[in-house]
Image 1: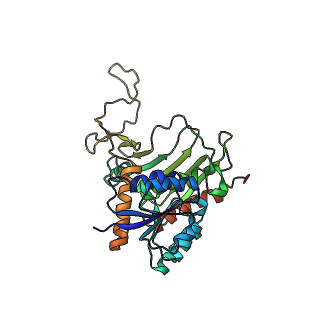
Image 2: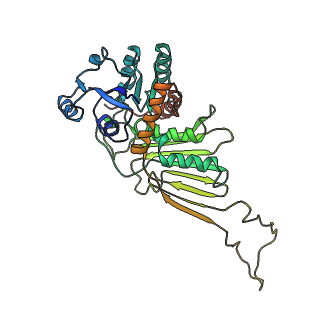
Image 3: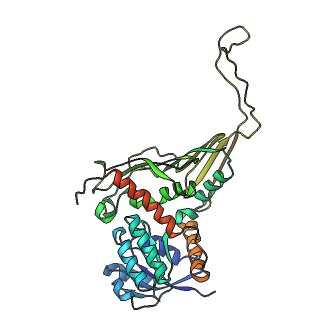
Length: 356
């Protein structure tokens, strides 16, 4: 199998430590890094050592005259849309890091441009390929805990940042930086229903954090005849507890990216009891509360891999066959655009003061 010639733009945390980690791993059977674009001289020196067979460039303009089967855009978030536009205009297949862009209009414009140029456009949403998310979808599809009533998604913790990701002008903050993962999972749980909408939202910037972007993000997403999805991304939650939770008509499933637990009652094992219209009493006539021992099933386990290893590897494999055989990717650019619609709505409903 012939490997594809790959170019990567940007050697920050994502470009070097997520994408680059995959390129240099044994899991990468699909790509050869031919070009690395990085404006910082020190990072270019590091790239020369990591990719001795690659041509190291200092500006994306230098790449435009080169030939690559795929170009990966790992620039600052606010540059995702303009850099992707330039690459598409010059006939490159492009994988852009999340967030796709700032607005749905930008996303749709890039999708249209890719189609006009006859090239592939993909967005790096590797969480869709993570073991914990795939297990979560299976629980939903099999009605393991009954008909889902509510889905809770938490990307919470007690931590803070003070880099460019705290600035609105750089497209930072929880909603744009972390949000594509939980909001993507939320829409995925609703089958990307065209009638899904944000029923409630709140963004906030707490004194705990630097910058001016949101470090608290909350949204309730609903769709007709679908479960309510409650998404929260909070930097001040000291007791996060879980990442995904499904509350169904027969029990509960919850998980983190590393492990899961499930408690439910099986259909038919606990028949509905007849209603007693008067008070309940024991054999001596004393009032008693409704009390019984249900037949309950419990399951626990651990996942083998996360979004950053298994998820990344499966994403790039999917992308390889999309380029070489024209297969449709599991995560399309159109789906990624819908995720940005949700985030854009949150900011429209909760404008924060711009201070930088």
